[in-house]
Length: 421
Image (cartoon, rainbow, N blue to C red; front, side, top):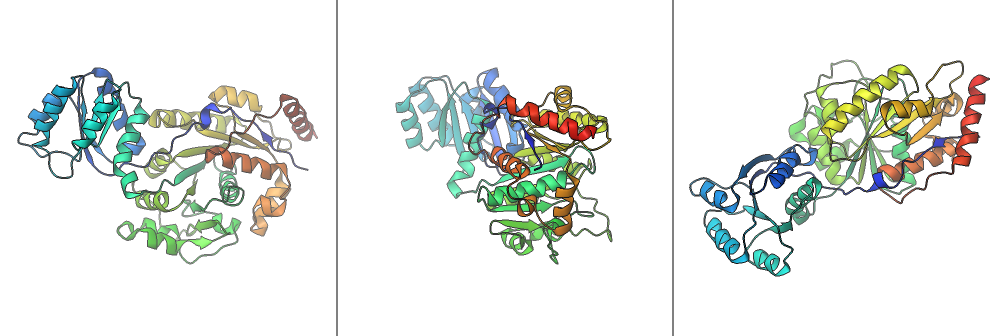
């Protein structure tokens, strides 16, 4: 039986709060302390609030009153106040005289006072939160004001990309989507974004006449109905948004070309797995930055290590408030191929692999040629169990315990013996 080496970092990284994307609104903050001003400025750079226009001012509610005496108010006014209740109420009444219809007000106070909270809400204030305020908590409060009220769905985007071409990232993406759909019984879409050479149609034995290209090249038409018509069914809970896989045209996409499609997927599907091609373009980087979870697939060699470290550095800088990127090592122990040990690879990029799959050309090759997933071909294998565990991790499901160290040793020895033979 083929073994899969699966190793977990622990429960801390599983703490994940799903926050809906904030729409294209205008936000002006009026802060009294540098600490809150810094929180708002850092939040403005987060992917969830990237569509909004955010401006940070100092001066608190007095500055807000002066700013809007003769100027239109934004969609959201954020005001930090250290004033007492009576003074704050008086200032807010003055500010209300200048507020346009539809403007929301979020107050950041410094006292945990339920009576004050009730008084503010009764006066029409949208929300009151207490400092100190972590970045994600601020974003969550703003998101709540503009998404929960309209019942916005909170689908999760999982982007899977290879550190190098040919490492098996598409295979991991497709089998991961299958596990999410079948093992977790979650409605899932696999979106093949390798427009010229995508293999999702082959792997799922599908040949749909339309797919993701129709949506990408007609952004003005993209809505839930269009995307639904472009999907082909691969299972009870799994649908495919296929790539054209043709080279009759170039696919030079603009940075935001995928945004309408991703917005619809996030709003209509509990989970969408994005099969990202190995290339570095503005739209690829934007898709990676926009996703809720990133899974990087690598083989244990020097080129993969270099590329993985480079991608990690960029994503850590672009997504400072998100969970750690997930690393999956693939093709461990390929015959007659020198490779970097799993522990050394992890140490070099300062990231433990979520899973390390051994080389198994027969299992994966047969599945690909038959248009099947590994779970269909060998449902009882450790490989399938590993994909199910990865599915739980990226979907934030039940905590998975680390395997006993006594088990990992013999498995690593077994891979070493297979490689030596």
